[in-house]
Image 1 (cartoon, helix red, strand yellow):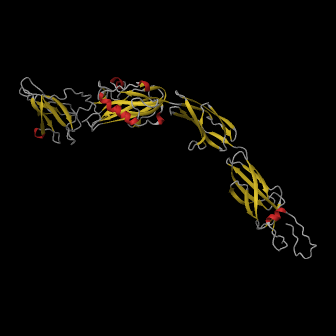
Image 2 (spheres, one colour; image 1 turned 135 degrees about the vertical axis):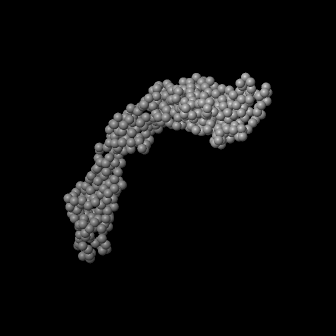
Image 3 (cartoon, helix red, strand yellow; image 1 turned 90 degrees about the vertical axis):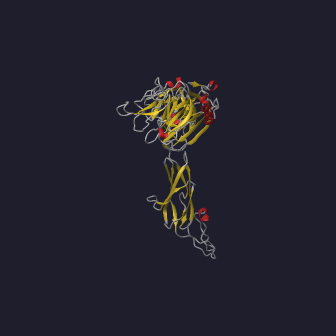
Length: 526
């Protein structure tokens, strides 16, 4: 039975007032849910009669005329020997009401007048069995209706024990024409399990649904219980495509993984054979699913960094789609970064592919309706973000013709260009014109500068090489345009000090004026 919010009718009997109050308390719905949730509710005999029980609905578990699912547990193993026993309350034999009532003991051969026990009663008109004092033995309550023409007669409690029942272990209670348990449904005396299963009919939402929460009302006396699980699928009859049974808690949300078109619940009812539970009402709230389908990228595409491509999708909900969020994963869905949020549901987004090369990429579209329903879809298979363009690098210094003094500190300089960030830089030099190379550093950040102490390797065939790596990783390489020199001697200035690095870089050759005989210096090219 499906009810929309504006038309919700709670078909509940007086005994279900608590169930309605529990629903309000547990879900915050009130009689009409604040959201657009709809409710499937089962609370009448006709509702429950559409279900089934593996052992047959109507024997030990049945949909009663009172509008609930009941478990029959009123046959008893009084002496706990594994066989069910029968109690008869004997009332009158046309001459006297002082008749004994009988217990027929069950056995592997059935029941026999040779295997019974009789207990004193007076016009007994009913029997009830329960472990009244909770000592683990079943007690017999026999209602005495009259004796010697008077209805002022006590009724008896025969207390159960390890040695059976006797007058010496009996209590009497004042009653007047007592009548107790005139009718009892014995169910199937050939099969009596401590667990019975009730499976509901299939509810079809008519469209993909988000199953919100489940609430049920049950009467489960001490020694009995009711628990519920659900399963879902997209076919009208459960088949191999349906989910397995998932346990749910009363008043709690149904797992999101079970969202589908159809749902069914299963009640497990247990008894200790002394008390029996009944299931009075079940309600499941749900909302139409926000359907989202991602079309691109969806099929193993190969998109190049910095190119523009279209992310395409379709999203639909009965109340409209309010906004779209887009996300990217480059590790197969373990982690997600945001592409865009709050986009209009216009079915496409022009995306500048980021410089994050990977063969394990996914895009996820998340749609939001005005009433907070969400839906999403992710690329069906991994796609690739590729980067086939190597970075460019240019050595600026030393780039040819320089003369560097051993032990001096100089800055090796370069510039780069790429369609994405440079991941790392390696710096090396050669004193053999590039025949072999000596590594100065690897894994450098791309700050365009490396401070170098000129090594004691004098040579006129020196080069510097810069290698840059992007995240693909592609490699870009450049070397000094021409040879530079490393010297091990220097000229003394007029004051006897060696020239500064700055002055040497500013003036690579210098001729001293030797006509000034008073100046004591050496002429050196550096």
